[in-house]
Image (cartoon, rainbow, N blue to C red; front, top):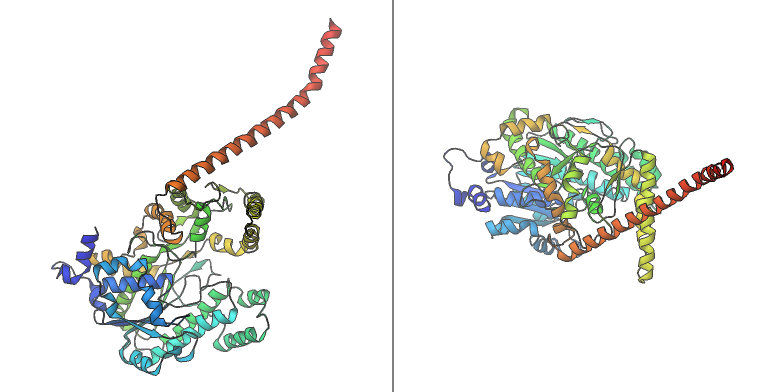
Amino acid sequence: MDDIYRRISDEEVFGEDETERSEIKEFFHGQTILLTGCTGFLGKCVVEKILRDCAGIKKLILIVRSHKVSAKERMKKYFQHEIFEKLRSYRSNFESKVCIVEGNLIEENLGVSIEDKKMLIDEVTMIYHNASNVKFATKISDSLKCNVFGTKYMIELARECKRLVCFMYISTAYSHSYNKVIEEKCYPPPADLKMVQDIIDADEIAKNGIPPATIEETCKPWANIYTFGKSIAESLVEEFGKETSYPCIIYRPSQIISTYQEPFPGWCGNFNGPALVFIGYGLGIIHIKPPIDCIQDYVPADMCANSILALTWDTVTNKKQDNGKVFIFNYASSTVKPLRFTEFENYTVPKGRDSPSIRMVGPNFLLRAPCWFLFYVFHFVLHGIPAVIADIVFMAMLRKPQAVAVFYKITLNLKTLLYWGTYDWRITVTETQKMWERMNHRDRFLFYNDLRTINWNAFGYTYWFGIKKYLLKEPLDDPPARRKYSFMWLAFNSFKILVIVCILYYLLGYWLSLISPITEFVKLKYICHM
């Protein structure tokens, strides 16, 4: 399969296809692309996809900030990442297409040098602004500087670019999550730039920053400072789109999870989203789930990257008559291929038993609470008590106790964690579906992103294995882990049997105590009768 893919995706090997050619690859031929946020989960997928299947580009420019070492030193290590292994086997010289520009999103002029800025202005034809501060629990000033003012500075750069044909802002489908139904349209922002600057100033002046309660009140009805900032950034792009002669795109993906197919199934780049929950299931830490079963909106990272490129092609080539306006595209599965959390659990959780982790701390089982009261009771019994026992064991081993602290932190943030898994949004993708219909057969294969055709069962099969291999860094077949798993299940089942025997013994004793007076009375009556 890899050999077939190599042939049809590489023009030098495949040559001309007399029946059908890739319109998307032709569209990107000769383009100079500027991308921010290349070091993030989605950013890596976009970089890998462009360099592998859009080899005809002139240049891919990546803005990277220095962090302990220079940007170029960081990127040397970056391209040794496992996600680029297949690309390297296809095109060993792919780095020749990459240009690294050192900069910082929160600085005016993006912190780039005069020479680099001139190069960007003269050469860039497409901008993908993907960088953002995705942390929910962070200083409000840090979040707004990156997500709002970083977008403002990118727009200012775009205004100066001489050859730009498209500007895409990669936002989130939850930028207006107070709505039950999220459509592909612009929504009013919660604040303007002046208010944002006032909030930043207040946060920096305060000794310990703005208190969490004040932040929560400021953001209402937005869920947190991240969605608050992203919605304001969208409004900046909307206003910018009204003045341009080329299309501006706001792209809103929902919860991005591991890859479906490319460059290999199951690759997961971070612990965000549902990954951390399923790690908890797999390691035998989490055993209880909420009493509701909502539709989860997941999109695989590789399909997300493919849709970004396909939407750029479709918008620029097929909507030229609409230049001067902003185009909104949601990329979400809840309305075209809905998946309930229980379904995904059924596809995924059993794989944690098929390929157990050596780090597991308990048996792999999951119970659903019949009501919210019992959910919190079970949370304490199944998570809190084991945390106390674990810390006792840690102390006996002269190690630092930490399980109770983790349990306490999770309990404090339970409301926030449950919000993203139980709100049950419906995110429409009407405009994105039109793009799916316009793609030809070859592009549907090379840039596969049609969420209507995804097989969640097949995806669930690879999900845990990807987490184990790429996040936990463990082999898929690990005999010591299997032996540990078998021992834990034996100990757990023995404990269950012991508990059941004790309960039965207690019930039997209780039952005998109830009937004993009756038996004595019957005996006495029988003796008297004699």
